[in-house]
Amino acid sequence: MPLRHDLPPMRDFQLAKRFAWDPQAIDFIQDARDWAALDPREQDLLNRLFSMFVAGEEAVASGLAPLLWALGRLGNLREEEMFVTSQILDESLHVEFFHRWFEVTGPVDHSRYWGPAYRRIFFKELPQALEALLTDQSPRTFIRALVVYHLTVEASWPKRDTLARSWLVSVRAYCPDCGKASSTSSATRAVTWLMGSTPCSACSLPIPLCGLTPTTP
Image (tube, rainbow, N blue to C red; front, side):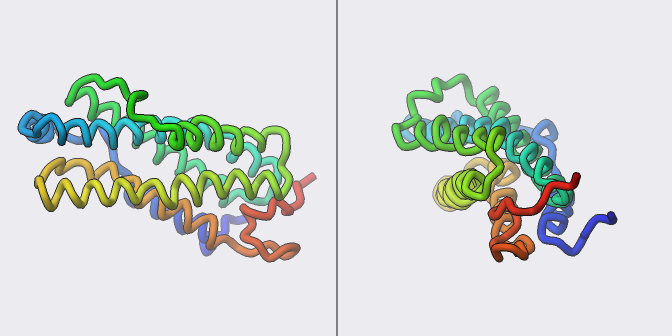
């Protein structure tokens, strides 16, 4: 069957290709100079923010593999599978960017910035919800996995990034390259895919949420 380019996952897949970027192409020379000019409290604020991002991006970059596998098990969701591959690439690029950042600004003990709520979301709830798809592709398991990842992690977490970058630009005119690694655009595509997908004929939920599409024999 031909690809359905009119479906939301394919539109978002095209957007992911259009906004492709390479962390290795970013020159951090000015960022390094700006970092040295910050006072210790400002450096600590950025270390806190980026320490949470680097671990969060690593968690989702590796954690999305079960979702991709489970979509393949359902069958007839080729467009959704293609979109999820672009999400995995996006998250991996974010991981690379933040690691490059800390190579420039210096090593940090990231774990000291991870509070109980953060640890629960990224190190317990997220992997449990996604890994459950390896043994159970029921609607309930799909809903839990997609709500935890797309609506908790992707829909709410990038707001911190947006607020912090707004402060840095307006108050300190700092970190010109931070916007190149913004998680907001990829997060928007993730949420759009989830809520804008074609409704299932059996339950009227977006197809990624229902898990009722029959597997092709």
